[in-house]
Length: 253
Image (cartoon, rainbow, N blue to C red; front, side, top):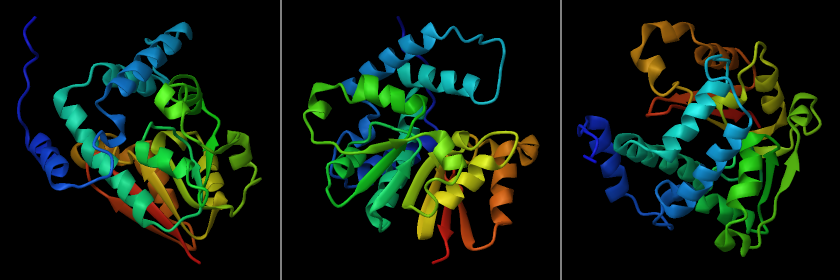
């Protein structure tokens, strides 16, 4: 079968520069292109298929999530390279932001994060959601990862919403998808869980660049949530317009 047509775009060339001009500890940065990622992706897709989602009924959060795993399973070359900037930004934040306690709402199989799980000076807590189930079933069970001494705790989403961990974490990471709901309850919950002086990193806040390129996205819920954050007292908000989009919140000490 002939290889798929692929145009070398400016974005692809930019991300190749990110690959070639960066020096990171692990060559397989964030497992984006190796066999372990491919195996866990195939297993996750098989699990999602057992849920029998009606893909004709597009509901907030579910349909894009299924599309994400389809993309992981058969990545387009440009999309795969795109992840380098995304992965490097995340790793830079984890490496350069002072933190001892972290709350993470997604469990991407990043070797750099796994290193933190094995670091006795770091305390990592995951939110119990579908991404965590994938981590427990299909990533942690990998023999090489399972052989590492990983330490983490788990809380429920309701614990975030009800303030059970108010001011507990000095670093929080989540995707904008973890915040989407008819209200701002998740935004308020994660902001409350952030310790004074702490940093909160929200990924994919550009809607895969759509808020930069499509006029209708100015009314999108991605923008609505970020405008809400702008109006909160006691924090600074930085939207970084690269690729997937990053919004960084710093709570006043």
